[in-house]
Image 1 (cartoon, rainbow, N blue to C red):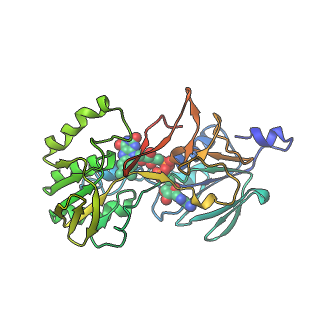
Image 2 (cartoon, helix red, strand yellow; image 1 turned 90 degrees about the horizontal axis):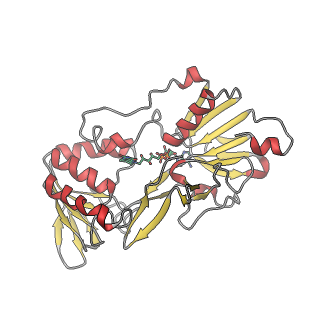
Image 3 (tube, rainbow, N blue to C red; image 1 turned 135 degrees about the horizontal axis):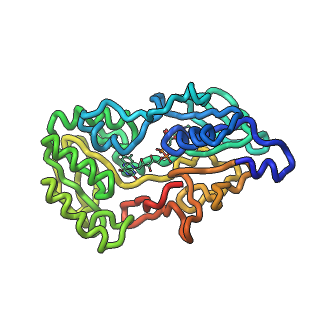
Length: 308
Ligand SMILES: Cc1cc2nc3c(=O)[nH]c(=O)nc-3n(C[C@H](O)[C@H](O)[C@H](O)COP(=O)(O)OP(=O)(O)OC[C@H]3O[C@@H](n4cnc5c(N)ncnc54)[C@H](O)[C@@H]3O)c2cc1C
């Protein structure tokens, strides 16, 4: 962590700021303490909730079997300062400062862990009954939708689509999944690996329509480009995610083609004293990049690589 500063001949960093309070940010902050770092550690997150794990959102939390999925971490005891509900809006490396909604925050070392945000379906934003599933708030909004046992159309047969469809079927909803590609997970996995996954939908009792492109979403219906009109009490869009890095614009941080932060094998970014971890970063790992951000057809999806 202190390599860059020490190389420059200055003392070890005393203030580490972690931007993003998801899995990667929390693990980073905890690991610093576990490895004996005694300087200040500040964890800044845009969401107002106690930091939580996302995988249960599409499973137990969605089905109401669990109220939340907060990490079991005593931040106070670890001496980690949490700033929640605070969006980071910019980085000024020359000043060693972050800009946030609450004003500037100085750092000696910055770790960027702002993760990813879901890709929106063009034209569907603001249409009543259209949902995403990335955050705890999203899952809480979807719970009553499941309870009402609507006819639900899921756009995208990726991981989120598969998990949501399974949960919605379990809750007794009629589910149709529309996928622009010829098969589920086309952007993420080779055909032979993904082939059995088409069976998930049949097993769950969800209708899967491949080669199905959404033309338009309107209140109560999804229209496909072949003229099919699917009734939809609710629509869940799961067409991939993109690194949440727009706030780094103008900072000089090198980004890849999909906005991912380009880091080296030590997770160092192109900017001195700035590191990147988690879904927002791409770094070399065993000869490949850890996160391959790719797009196939209209269903962009993130290749799942090893976590840092
Ligand atoms: C519903 C769901 C189910 C999943 N299930 C699985 C699974 O079963 N297995 C699996 O391997 N993976 C799963 N994943 C993926 C997994 O959750 C992610 O890989 C993981 O959350 C990545 O962690 P992260 O900390 O890098 O990013 P994130 O979890 O995205 O956390 C980033 C945090 O940074 C915050 N942030 C973003 N921008 C800013 C800003 N400008 N200022 C301040 N804060 C900001 C965000 O609010 C967020 O809390 C699932 C994801 C979802 C959404």
